[in-house]
Image 1: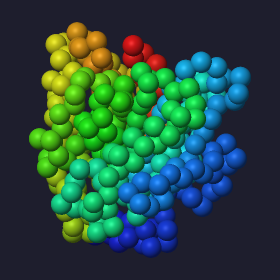
Image 2: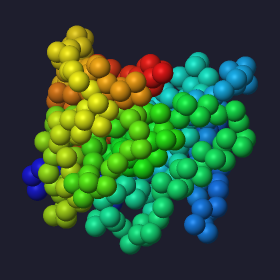
Image 3: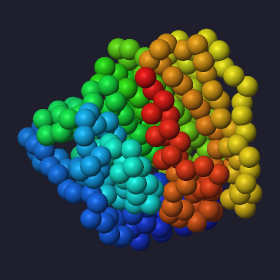
Length: 317
């Protein structure tokens, strides 16, 4: 990224824009999510909750965590998707949780690059505590608990799959992978369903891996998209990869094309699917173009990531 773009990016941050932080709090989050709180590590932690209509709450309910990006908030990330997960939840009958991180950043395993406020913060335990709270309040299906997130929220979702594979049935990781420092620590207790989605032109989280550098600071070194997919292929015992499938490019004006990679003969619990958003940036496909293309590149309109993610989660046995 050249100096002019960095200056523009910094200016946007100073104005309170999202940049990679994905915070759209300037808009009313709506009446369909409510603020909740829980005490964890002797401090109040907050999360935002969406419940489906009462007539869709019969029986055991799936539970979906959507984790915000660095600098964002739970209610902000709900707006990033135009509330699409909430719409799907109302139709399909599941609960959506949008947690808030301390100082708007998750302790996602990149410990050497944590903000001082995040040192010692147990976000894995915080998410687990929310699950236990909701289990005491609603009929949560223990076999259908999922996580997804973008950027810092994607890295944190990876950590949840590594540390709490016995709790989470699956996860969808967007514009993220896993840090090289945390890679060796990731030892899921069992296979989990994983969907990976990254843009080849992401200016923040490099598709080809290596250092995440912003304003001359190293924000951690990460695995490439290819290596991250290979990592989960091995963890999930997938023996075969099918030929890549291109989705018809029905919206050429968006600057993206989508290729899907499917894997089979995996462990019964270890489904794996990978999406390459060719020309895609640091964005949520089908979501808001929260800053101009010169800063975050393209938002794909070929797919809606929320629909793709829930279809994948629904396919997990």
